[in-house]
Image (cartoon, rainbow, N blue to C red):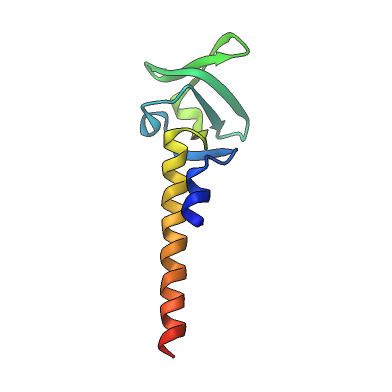
Length: 105
């Protein structure tokens, strides 16, 4: 059941990197969180020089890479599903170990 939940693509965002380069290749949209705590969702994000750029409300905007605290992707993307799957596997493994310990006593 845990695995089924992990693969359903829950809504929300999954952090995939602390720098734009660590999050490439980008999906259709990313959420950029800056060091000051502000967030922006960019569609069609790209790295250009020392900036991450993309569309916000059909306007091209960019942020210096050194101002980015983290990059997140929608949980329903392959990148987000991989993060969910990894968490689901960890929980399932922990539950199996606990069940085995209970049976051993």
